[in-house]
Image (cartoon, rainbow, N blue to C red):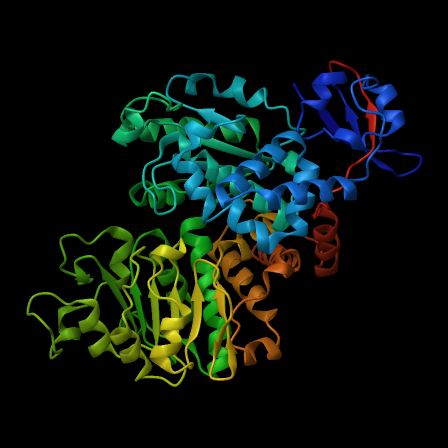
Length: 574
């Protein structure tokens, strides 16, 4: 049953919520609860009189109280629990606090702290959020989705919990990721929380720790595989199409073997994308676009080494390939510029471990003839760096220190401004630190990291490492696709978003070596990405036929500002 509807007064033009709850039930609804900020009129008309203390607070005074409590917490996990608790009590207040303190709170409400929370989620569970679908209730998916109390559902973030960050299979404890991603869609992109739904596909877990944990709350069976899993996903997608036909679906933290398959199978059947593949690739591409301007160079003048060809590494590689293709290079010219390294070493076309999405990056044997190797039969990262002479080094491996001083120094030999993307989270798993890059390149390196690092003082200069956070792309992409009513999410939309992000970097920021906009400007970034995506959707025949200025106006109107909206009582059973 829906708990409220968003309305406009036809006489005065006032925005208000028509509310279908009363009294304590209203105060227990996080979408609607204002706590001490309910007005005297609302208290009388919504049966709240006597349930609240007499003082009426402003949101500002509530924020002051909340920030004071937040900063008293002893560590980030306790701060995470405080923020989730606030979200469970009052979403408008939670989002106002988050939006006003994004640089401070994003690492708590999402990576890296959300990973720590997911590892313990069954032990720290306070209140369930979102929807859980499992093999025992998938037959009832229509009833489950029809029971969602939101006014409407436009965005769904879903995971099956098999590859949560760099932590592996966490089963339904991985629900912390969709919940966190929805928070970023709202705080960074401006989507209204009342149209966003986190979901868990709880298809079991192969994590023995969870299966043996008496407090684990998930489906206590080994993971579905093969035809059973594919049938489950098909029923899920069909359920979404029937019940939320206008929704955009984001696949999140699926294992590599299912992530690519789900993306390709469903991207033309339902508006959908995979942020781990496409979002990571698009954000990294934006970083590289800015770096090319700083270097006064082009993509085709660089040589790239990508270490770790999972979802993120493959997504980055595909985006680099697209940029090189736009600059007129042939398939073989592109292959000669991108060197992909996995656990077994440089990917070769005759490698029996080669997986489908990795094939465009595999090298021919003839291309490495004459290379000097440390040991015959294996081409290591050190061998690749020495022989391929890369100017761009990218790591998504979760292996701390993989980019050693010797490797960084070797890259620095081949270009005046080496580009290093050490993108693994958290900080403890980064391939190298900004200080290590500065030392190896004498401060000449351009760097982006997965986790945030403070600016670094180096020989009288301040060096910056931009945080290559997918938050720069996915909230704006989702907003733009929804405003445009796009029937499909395409690679060209991500490319348009990458260009929009990079275009926001000022010449002054480029002179400082900054590769991405400031995090504090994330809503402006999301608006620019949304406009670029909407225009691309329109121009490719997949979106609404409205002009650029109309899209700009619609996107600005769609970005929700977390404030309390006036309430009016509606019928108890709408």
